[in-house]
Image 1 (tube, one colour):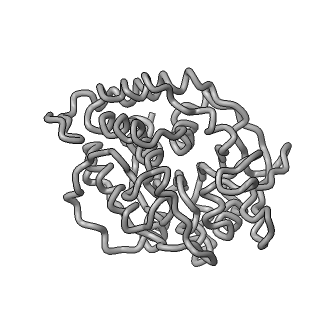
Image 2 (cartoon, rainbow, N blue to C red):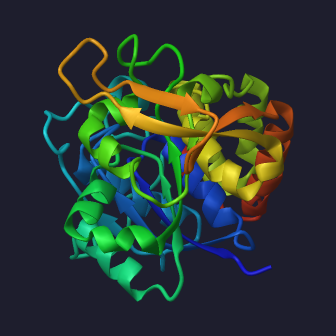
Image 3 (cartoon, rainbow, N blue to C red):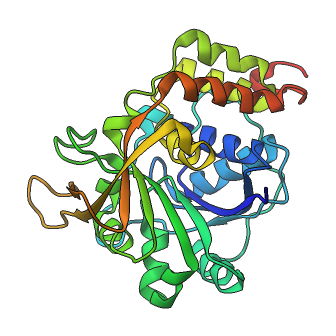
Amino acid sequence: MTALPVIIDCDPGKDDAFALFLALALTEVFDVRAVTTVAGNVPVDRTARNARRIVEAAGCPDVPVFAGCARPMLKTLQTAEEAHGHDGLGGAGLPEPLMEPQASHAVTALIGLLDDMTWPTTIIALGPLTNIALVLIARPDLAARIGHLAVMGGTRDRGNVTDFAEFNIHVDPHAADVVLSVAAPVSLVTLDRTRLLRPPEAWIEGMRECGQPGMALASMWREFPVPLHDVAATSMLAWPDLFDFEPCTIRVETRDTPQHGRTIFTRGSGSARIVAAIDREGLFGRLRQAMERYATQAVTVAGTPG
């Protein structure tokens, strides 16, 4: 089977880091063409630095990383250092990146990558949707080049920023409203599903056997434990048999009301689909198997010699 060409747009962030390590491990499933970063969990200079640290730790320094938008379209940036640490990868111990930052802005890079693709490509979106929205505003014709958009965002019940809004959507609801209305097929895994993916302590500690990436993940989760939110977006493409989906349409509340940033779903029909259920134990098993591919890597995290 030919690996699926993907672009990963993210704001690393611990769970973004896990999702990136997973995609880079599954080389028979994903052909990661580029990583683009956006301000979200931490400011964009840190998300771009973190993405470079991650791809190098995964043994993939040839994957280019492009820094993107430093703020939402119409709002002041809200970050989440309290959950991810000041640098976004609190406790990871990953070394500083050796690779130089790419000169092109992520929006310019995305336009170029989509223009150059000979067939529609998949975008995995793990953060606020600012970069992708600006691509679609500047070049609406490129919506047809996005064959599939896999998103972690939104919620069908209580939010984690307000009573109504999930973080990725709340940071830039105007961008989310643009992106989630495109014609390309959208698969959305929402907060109410990913909240159930909080790994047991013994399972996450077992990641220490999975090379430098696993050591970094175990150290981050010891310091700042969170559910595997963004990991679910990568996983639903890798292992769709572990996920149940239902069709829907999606809109985002952008007005300045108490429900600002709320994702509103109409189920039963539409070009989008949301995750209805996840085989949690099956997912944890496959994640461990995938991460074991890093087990032969030299470990140099958090002062531990390789």
